[in-house]
Length: 188
Image: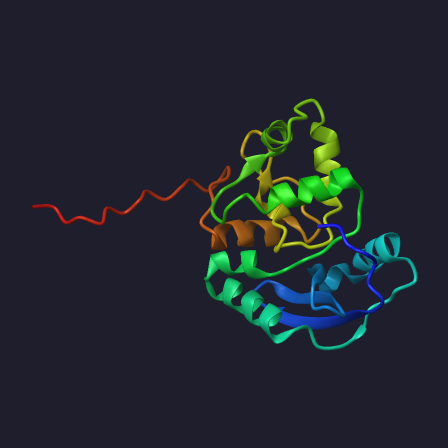
């Protein structure tokens, strides 16, 4: 979702079951970055790359953004889709990031499958690099991309957070099988 560069950025914090999250929003209330407190320096580098001299100042994120994030961590997995976000980045990166939002909670895709879905099956490494440069972790769900063999592969916030997020979403990956669906009809 390209847009003009923000004039100002706000930095808020949110306690989650897997650590303190950093929430960066712009003056219009769009989410510009989501990362983890222990990754703050890498997030700051990424924000400089995308927005130059615009440095986030402490400030409250919009209440509806914080509410939607809280309810996601409480189990309402579909809430992330209601968060409006904007990014800088190259057109290719933004295409990959937009495609990530089409991966539903509980689903995963391999890097190769994501590249094929984008019509660039031979660009698996480029898709992986764009996935790794995603500034809006969790909301733009880069954690839902796994290895072709079902293994958990790189995640900027750490593999244990990725495992927690996928477990939270009841997603299948190597080492964690899909749970059997429960029938809604009783046996006669």
